[in-house]
Length: 119
Length: 289
Image (cartoon, rainbow over the protein chains, first blue to last red):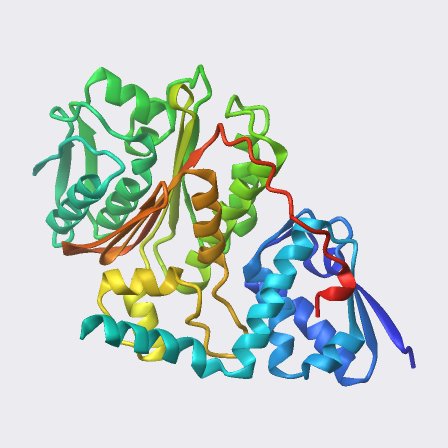
């Protein structure tokens, strides 16, 4: 069995535009399937020129719901991304890590803030 | 039946007038409705997006709509952006190419929306923005569109329209959906019962998302807010009874008497912005996870 799998985002989405959450879900399924089998993933964004957070949340952010941070760090690499897209992905990853560490925190924090405002 | 409307600017009063119009129209069915624009001397072209959404919803309630008595100036501005073509008027050629035409999209049309934006931003006379600014501008619009796709549950589409004002270096772009709005989305997804204006602030603030399953979220509108703040532009959000505006960094939050049946996001970009929008330090792919 392969120990490493290169996944082309362009191939899965079929477009240079990575925008829809549904397309992100397709990429997520491919990555998650490989990671579950213990196969390291190199995710290539070659030929992708439009990337937004809704897509990245679905494709990569939700990995943190299933896999530990350290496992993702050791088994997932990204390639062929420019600096702006790397910055966007880093932000999505940081939000996902915080969210899955304590999903209730996001909503409780604001609920409390709003209740204080109303007092 | 004749319905008269007044001037429509991209501001609280303009949105309020459109909300009042929607409430006048929302109970009608099997009516022949004449929207009389004889008293309208100014109509911000980008506001064709919420105006079109309201009229589309009215048509879907089995009414026929005619737009009549437009002054020549209003006829010109709303024909150049193709809005009036939906109501039987002829399209006028946009000589100076300052319009981004009025369009209606379904939620499955994300790629069409991208192609529409790209078509108008390249070689169409719209401002010669720096590459970094143009990219930020494009991505902001895509984030808003996809936000409507994911969160609004609209069954009546997503509407957009833009107008460039070269003399003041501003580009206004409005996206409207006829979905459940921020307040209901928050209530239904996470059970938080807050007012409409609070709901907008909640959605645009740093710390949360209505995503409750395995897909995290909550970055799109925050990125937009950050970018517009740096750009020196303006964001206005209308959802249900809520109104939120950030202009030159100053925030206003208030309510309307009546609700809008969905959400409107209006962006005003400063096209003369010369910032490079480059990252302060290089990010390595090895530092992401």
